[in-house]
Image (cartoon, rainbow, N blue to C red; front, side):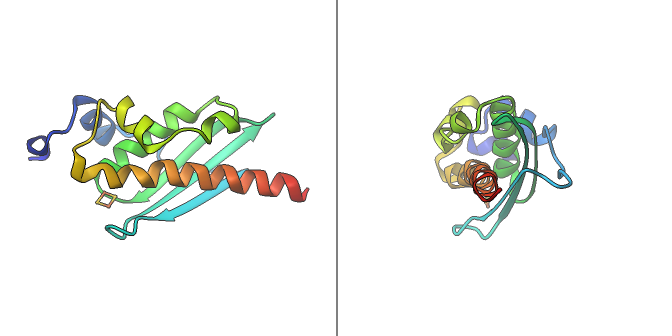
Length: 129
Ligand code: FES
């Protein structure tokens, strides 16, 4: 069972009821990252207004921890200024979830990484406008 390796209640909740799953058509920012440790993939979509994240969705071919961390990161990033959202680290996500088992910490790279890529994509597009 998943709990045996020490998942918190919050991780289990976000795994079984992930928030903000899906994609945004014509997003203002899009990020995709792969996890070199396991080969799993994460995609993140953001809508931005006045530099604030108004909507955010994710899709993943990842494990339960990847799902839980991305669900959590979407909740943390929503309504934030993009500069603030860029500061969210994998450790922030893990602590919001009351911790991840050490052997699953690498999974949280995907969530924070894809968010950062989506914001960078938004910033790049804004510069090119
Ligand atoms: Fe691949 Fe968790 S095992 S993201």
